Length: 427
Image (cartoon, rainbow, N blue to C red):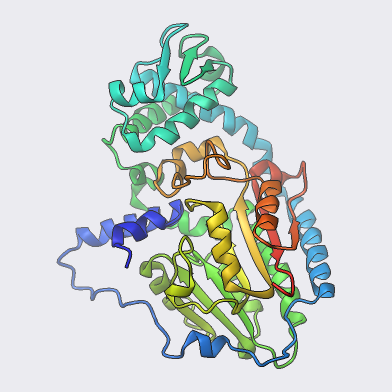
């Protein structure tokens, strides 16, 4: 059985942040009068029995319904991408990216590197001679790549060479002295282990921003809106007498879950809410107590789900929101997802598809973000483009694929997409 540390290592960055911050708060109340959190709800009824359907039962997604869902998803994506709040965020994104480079440069100045043209450093050298923790090697490589993109550094083999000394006047002009000082000091403190990244990611100890972002930020309203429209089409077309069987991978605090549950037929649905940590399945069981068709279980999607108690080919839908990228190997992960799905089953996938430099100040510091080991597929960060997700899903045996973020749209600028993939009927 995986250890608690192993389970925490499997958490997505945002959920790790929330979990560790809350656990830290609990530790501070070690003599609290509050009772310990209950174990996750584990239903008495066998999943195998509950998910079984009769022979010859119609599949939940006909060819006509698939075409309808794709059209609805496209329509909703176009509508939501034109929302003023999302357009405003997208308009500011290029400036935020360049400002982020200025903050990274401020941190390198505090480390005392690249102070003269021609000065050369490797990642290994910065770790050995400037006190950077080895676990931040991937993050540091992204920093130097960002400054290479800005033309300040030059990448030569394993080395990065200053074309000009830091600070760069062009970047300095993009940020105030106060912000450069704040980010420079705190980023170095995290790199060297003086400050835990959660203190930077969740300033003031509040996890509310993490919990609310998946519900309230324009880009996540866009994602959840498309997902809801597609799921509503499935509910309207649900065959009479056919149970709809769904499983969510890495459900976390339930930001996407909350947008889908009201759309499902209460009497004919089973929704298995899973996460790698019981902490989040416990939260889910409290938050969604009003939905009697939910079940709560631990699942590590990096490992074969069948030995973990999930019957193969028993789910019509698998939902994965902002989680599959945070695994060691995408090919393995998709193989396990496919193992869960019944023939003709659908994967609803919400993903970040572009690395934004602001991730260097948040989830890019957390271990789950840099868990990836398939470097031929993901050399610098764990995110895949929509097109690459399509390639990986087809290689995993999915026959149908649709992505809804249009090129040039505000959502593409923000780097997210909602995708559907469908197994063939005879899978």
